[in-house]
Length: 492
Image (cartoon, rainbow, N blue to C red):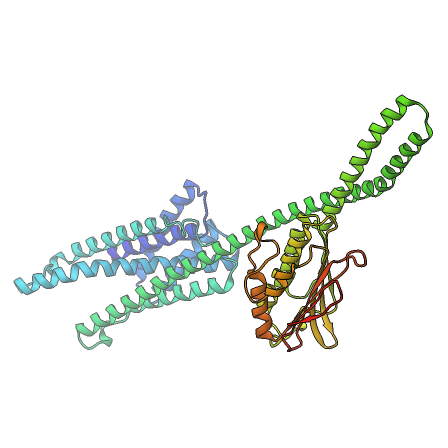
């Protein structure tokens, strides 16, 4: 019996069973099973050292299977793959340990032989050398395995057993390692000279090292992929929880809004009725004290009614739902301007007679359309904020096959000087409140580039809800028309 070969087999079998435990992340192992594993490995290593068959690796795998079937049985498909992979890892690390030892021992022996012309170890010391090598390899194997399973990504074993394709790849790497290790037992008679044997064994060791490194990368890659998948699932679950909370809040707010809407709807009739009742009572009563106290209550009730009406109107204007143009950027401009108008208690309306998406880029680009709308509506908001009656209406659509943008407002009219210099230089009606006059310079630049016409029409306040309109028509003429409130017409 080859005692040193038995020692190596014993170590490899023990390490393989330990790896089997680690890759399946088996936590609790009784002392009885540990002792049983040691005794079983010892007996099997002695038996295999007696047999010395070319199919040693197959017998090695069978031995591991026999033990786990009786002592650490799991689901059959999982047991087969885990045993194969654990033995592949064990043999691969054993191969790496042998490479490390060879990288140290061979140069030392070569240098010694070059200097003394005698081998470092004679035939009488061959058994001692073999024992030392086997012990060093076994120690290196155990230390490496212990360190390997302290790595964060590997300490919990193989976590992706459900990924059958990934497991098959790991088994292929392990089987390749077993085949490579079994080929080391090929008879030396098949080679011409010891140098060829050395080259062949070195090639096998290098190839097995490559497979072992591939096995490590395989494990690391799929563990990382699993962690990322779990992280994504955790994020999705966290977002789902937040969405559920938001949905719950929305539901509660909707219920509260429905209740308040009913209350407001009722009070819209009840409060004016009470106000009229108090007014009728004061008109009918002759009691001086009642009239005095009633008049005070009447004023307070009138203030409350007005304040409540203004609050409701402001809320409705601020949260008004505007029709969509079909372009998010243009919708954002309108919604922002609507909100800005609501801050100044201006009623803002949008009328669409078509979809903004229907405007080809040859007529006007989306960016230029944004600029036109922002500048024109902002000017209307500023002009309207000075007046008691505050309303703006923007109408967009095709009229007689010509696309138009018409902005009407109830604000202060243009000054004559402003109209005369419009588009020629910086001019503004509200310089004292931050007006720069740049807006219309930009507007005229775009109109000139696109060949669009600008028409300003002023209305008599007593006859119209609006005081003026600013209309842009993409007719290719680039004309500037002014229709003042007195009925005269000016063309520029």
